[in-house]
Every structure is written in C-alpha cells, then in structure tokens.
Image (cartoon, rainbow, N blue to C red; front, side, top):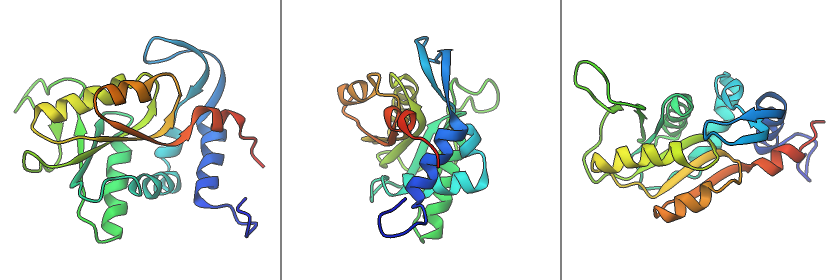
Length: 190
C-alpha cells in the first residue's frame, strides 16, 4: 500500500494482479528454450479490461514523447499496443498501434506489419509482455528497422532478468520494465 493511504496505487494493484494471476512457480520450459522454476504469462491480466487499463497507463508513461506509434510481436503484444494507443487517445495524444507478425502474411500483400503505417523514419516504441533473452523483442525491432522505422526503446511488463537487458543494449536499445521477475516472485498478496 502507498504510505499516505490504505488504497493501493495502480502500480501496487498491477503487481498484485501479476503475482496472483500471471506468475507460477514450478518446472517450465520457456519460449527461449530455457528451463525455469518461474513462469509468467501476462495474458490473464492483459486480456482483462481493468488489467489492460492498468498496464496501458503504466506503459504509456515510458513511451518516448516523440514516438508516433507503439508496436510489438504478435500475440503477447497485441492487447498491449492497442491498450497503450487507447490510453494515449484518452490523453489527446496521437499514437498508433502496429502489430508485427512472426512471419510475413502468406496471402494478399505478404505484410509483416499490421496497422496504420507511419512514414519511414518515424520513431516507434516496442512493447512486450515478458522479456527473457530479448529474442521476441529483437525480432520485432529488426522488422521495424528493416521497414525504415527508428526504434530505440523496448518497454516490457516483466523483465525476467535473464539477459534481455544486455541483448537490448547490444542492439542500441533501452529496455524499460514495469517489474522485475524478482519483484513479482517476492510479492505476497495481501
């Protein structure tokens, strides 16, 4: 709880939801192929209306002021980019959402990117639900850069603290996380 009140802050509310709905302890194989005793699946939070609202407002505060779009690799980032774009609109800020496909569309235009495409050279912030090694985020960044966009920042809900920050730094990217895995694992809901 915040020091000045018994009402939890939005950050505390989101931490509670992540700890109770998204975090599990056990024996898991991650998307990176690594084994872990910690598993984080943010979708039960990001796919609930009130959870997405908390995430979106928090992520929006870390989107560069001159960014004109947010983007992320499908599927984990789909609700995030839409939610952050909507939160921006609520603040009268122009910010579009883009979805980066895992592979080019197999029909029609063969597009990698979905959404209102900004002009080449536009700054885009990449959003991610969970970063482990950074592979998914870097795939999205590469697709965006290959399309002519500028990407300098990745904002994630959870940094698993397993090298993603170093991978981002090696690609001249700043990684900002709303929470570290250690913070979620240590949280005991009230």
